[in-house]
Image (cartoon, rainbow, N blue to C red; front, side):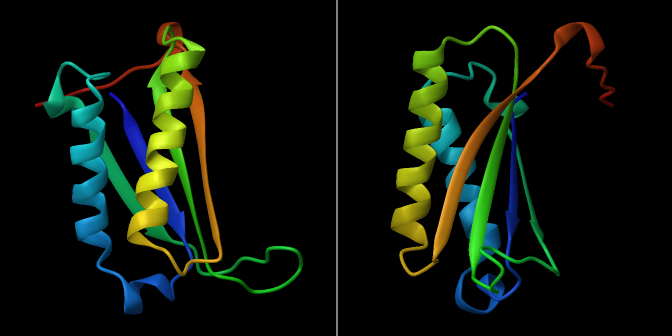
Length: 114
């Protein structure tokens, strides 16, 4: 934990190295100090084939940070503002950038690792 999930317009792949962006986000997450187990940080990125923003086609990237319950609003706000700043630095020409936190309920979360 955590999961950083990126959804973006496919045209970003022609102008940006999305794997490098994933690596940068992983490094950001570790550098925040909010996640003591750096091996638990997960970053995934998926191009969204169809979208409309304001009923028009525009380029975008939306990041969702999925966290287990229990982090303060201050920590959460630091993560969203810090990630938005990183995205703005790496993707300065992208029209729409957004970041949100979604908490995962510990009682209903299950996982398996090998």
